[in-house]
Image (cartoon, rainbow, N blue to C red; front, side):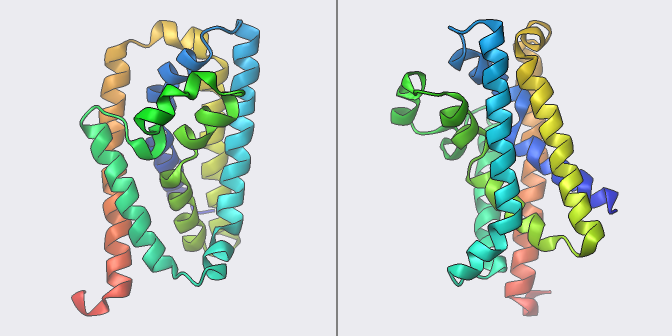
Length: 210
């Protein structure tokens, strides 16, 4: 198994979905629930994100082929999306791509099931996450590559489950400063991932530039 590729997948998912930075949003959306209901909601969020990640990784390339899209063009578009998310994180803000527009945020608390919308989709499983998974699933080669992809996804989903299910406890030991610093550090990691996607797509689309 390619452990370096598994680590890259884990780092990309952690940087994009960032459970630490999104923990306050989860707690805000579940503020009126008991701890047992919060844990149940956390399990539903993780289940929804897991299914979405699996579908994106397995069927992503087939979906692109159905629409007649080339993966290098998609990699370029995905890199731009991820870069915009990274720049928002570096400035301490929240990208509307995953966080929703102002009008969407106004209706978040009125959602019938916050585990599915907005927590799982689009806050965690948004365009940036889907783009990265489709690109990495295309890059995975052979049994070892697919095992590494699965291992990276599984490791992150396990961390996400621990974070959300233990949210009431974790929120008491993590200060706003730690969350802010984490968001900016992940923004730097995500910017590097975005640039790697952009450079790889440009090399494939314009081989004369190499």
